[in-house]
Length: 313
Image 1 (tube, rainbow, N blue to C red):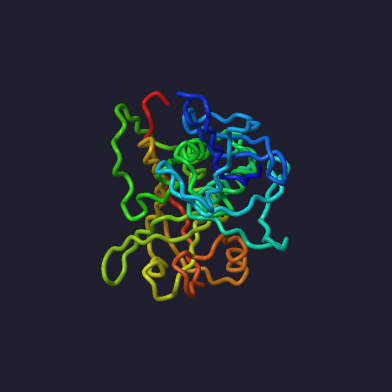
Image 2: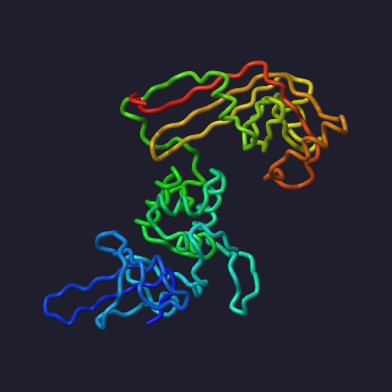
């Protein structure tokens, strides 16, 4: 008997009246896929160490149709077992390195984990799964069970819907309000902490065609907010004017959120040393793509923020 991560272990008891039991293999203890296995049972959602008996067989999901409970997902052979927390890029069947090819869920899990600066070992421990299984989910197209997604969402402080990419075409904030919300002002230090060092914010600016609010990728360097844009774009019109800049975060699952508002003058950054410093400090290219090499800097003169949370917090 040999198995891969993600395969199903099915137990068909020969006793009269005995129930059939199945579970997802979430941990291997031998590189060749032989028993024992860590199995997450579909009926209890618990993980146990299993030494399969003669009444058990492996359902390889890449060859057999899945039950209606979980759609079939192509599976790749599991890589040799690695120490807990090991980061790996994956290997091709011939042993050569290859770039990971995660599905949408895996990409979202990996992106959120890395955004929070968490290791696979940490997230796996929080989600009660083997680090190797988390690596498999991040690096391969996969369709994990609802129970697995729920634990991952809890470990990452997000929602199952967010990991599945649900609501990406809908505006945020359509969930139910808290029964007893608490709205409080954020002090300047809390505002700076939430601005952090980079992200996506909204720029309110007056253009020749009237007021506009546009999202921009930004960085924070020496307390100034800076973003790259094209010279003839709406964000470039901010230079030489007073503008408002806002960042926020909403948690649809808990109906909590915060926002920070910055008001101050914007200017073009043209000094070579200053431009070089901004280029070196940029974490990502602008999401909008294209040639966007004009830097605009906002010097905060007023910094305010608010947070909505449960009244007991």
